[in-house]
Image (cartoon, rainbow, N blue to C red; front, side):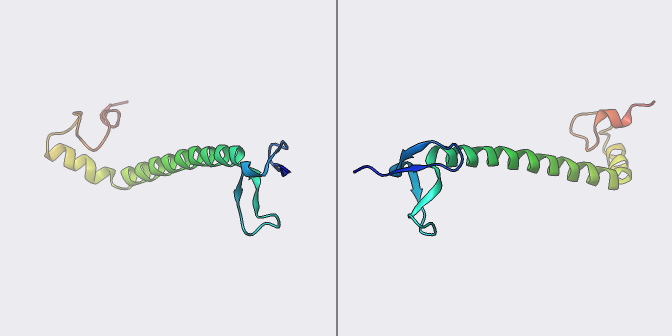
Length: 96
């Protein structure tokens, strides 16, 4: 006899072996099928990566704004103004 269970996410009836084991549930299987679990985890990784990148960019921009005076002086002393390798982007030195 083949046991069938309905996934709570995709609402498809699938074989019990298409669900991960989970001791905390009454039937000992996850509420979501393996396919939905994998998709959810992949989507979460993308969201996390995007959020982490945004946080890094905000942090970098804040650090640049807090240390702009020091960085400008460093670039001048080391003759890095407007060159690749300087701390500040070239657009920072362009006159308006």
